Length: 69
Image (cartoon, rainbow, N blue to C red):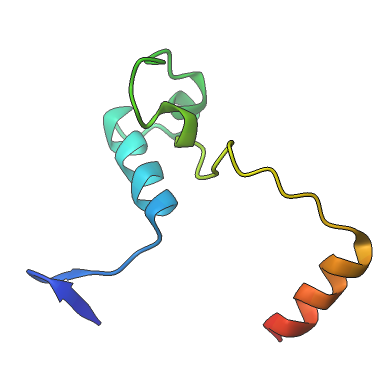
């Protein structure tokens, strides 16, 4: 599915992660060690949103897994 000028729609956190890997010369291990804490992407560099704290019970996890099937 093409959205804009030949680019396909992708999850934003994956796009950020890819940019961080590019910034670190393709070295995945360097992304975790990144010291550029003033970069707006820094909190998201590991492909997760650290500001989204969602705690799920085991029952909720099982229900979500069933919905995804």
